[in-house]
Image: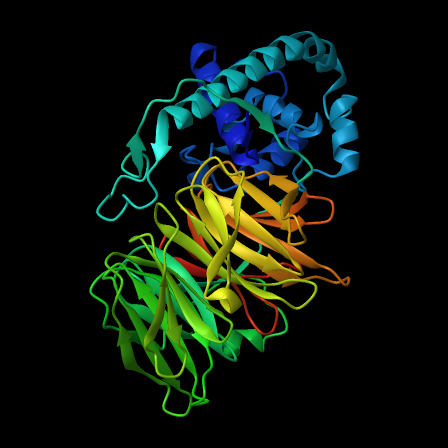
Length: 490
């Protein structure tokens, strides 16, 4: 039972070991003062944003020495590969050409011992991290009143067996892809959605919906620095956090979107493009607990709730037509699945660890129950004629929709709960699968090879939501209170 650790976990653990090593040893003892290797390793460290991984402030240039030689070994040995070190740099580090000739002999003797000590310390810390994870089982929604990001998200439950960890390599960490930061919420941002060309809406723990116009920045051909943008409108109405957003069309042909809230309601909003205003046109009531998910399926509006039910709403009259039961815990994910033969089905993911498939032509009867995840299923997503599911067990599963339904690929790489999935166009005929996680990162996957192609860092807390704009831009929502627009071409 293997658990993945991220690049950030290893960097943080190696850095903490190096700080302790320096404190125990003479600060004046340096194996190399060579400015090149210090610069390369310091840049690699700084580019991973120390605050994101809990390492404290970056070290001053005159204090970097042995710590970066050891962290650099993790890079070149394949345990971590950052794109900041070129292949030529790695070769020159390995053959010693970065060092003064007279210090190479001393380096060769002492470096092996220090690297062994560093590796053992990192191994112990990562194993301890994952043992702790298993003693502290995640309760997905106990963060509502917590200010402590480290402790109060969790519900303690003992488990019998600790897990072993593994590192999933082959990823490229790209921390400088954040081109625009949208700031305006006072609390977690759970969801983001494009409702009109260049018009985004975001839902937050602060009970509001912000409306953003990103058209001015989309029209810019290039940008060399991270830019900030403020909302053009803040919409109020919900009495608790706004966790999901969904845009849809009905017979009115108006620009409509829905918002799900922990106040047990769904609100329907109309966006007036000319007046740049939002009006609540309906409030859907019927769920007995938090409304946690929403989608459209078979020309119906469908919602999922912490009351363990799924409700089907007439998309025009907005009347509830059906209440679906079957899950034994919160329903966190919903999506429409279209099979290769054109059959339309509804998929739902639940905290009961299952994914259920419902047939609207059979009065929304459950026709399949998919089992495989070890924890809450947080998200379900259609990808071509397949279904992709993401879970609190940190795994992403790809399911074939033929008979019988079965898991055909397993995507491993995140080190915490996977919260959201979208697909994003790429240069060739395929799409990237994009995933967001509580490990503060976003990953771009090639589904065919089941390999992560790139890891995007920039958020300072959980990444809760993702969206792709009509122009193909990636947007993310985070518990750090921001919405970020990414330039994935860099």
